[in-house]
Image 1 (cartoon, rainbow, N blue to C red):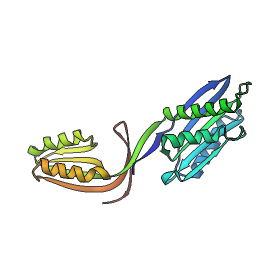
Image 2: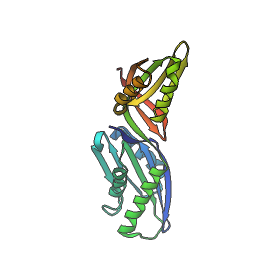
Image 3: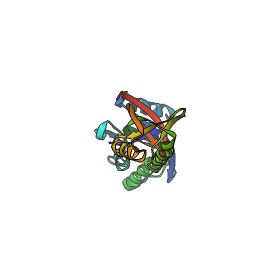
Image 4: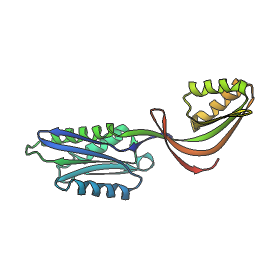
Length: 220
C-alpha cells in the first residue's frame, strides 16, 4: 500500500507570547536514528530547556514514541504525535524546541503552540508517497508509439527513459495497482504489437509527480 513519508525534512518557527517554538522534522528508519537526531537538536539548541518530540516508525506506524520533556503532561509530545498521525506520515520524527519567553501559556496555550509548530514543520518539509511498483520496459513499432505515449500521459505514468531505433522503447514506473489495467490498455491500443517486460520490482517515491528515489528490493 502507498504510504506518505518525509523525503526531505524541514524547519519552522512560531512565537507565542515571546516563547519561541522551533520545529525540526527528520525522516528516520529506526529508533536509533530518531534518538541520534534528537541529540543533534539538543546540542544545537543547548540553551533551550525543552526539546519535546514524537516519532512514528514501521509499517502501520507500529512504533510510536513521544515526550513532553518537562512540559506539563500531555501538552507537548502527544500533540506532536497527533499531528503525525493526522497527516498519516510514516518513519518521521518531529522535535519542537522551546525557548521560554517569560510568560506562562497555560496548558491549552502549550497544546496549541506545539501543535501549530509541528504542523508548520511538516508543511516546510517535502512529503512523498512511497509505493510498490514495477519498472516496465515497453517495446513497440513507430505506428504504436504515439498511442503508447498518449496512454502514459493520460494515466500520469512516469517515463524514466526512451529509445528510438528500429523500434521504440519506453521505460516507465507503474504501481502494482495500475499495472494490470495499463498492460491491458497498451495491448488493446497497439493491437497486440507491443512487448511488455517487468525489469524489476521496486519501491519508488513521488512528490508532485516527480520521481524522488528508487529503493530496489528484488528483481521481478
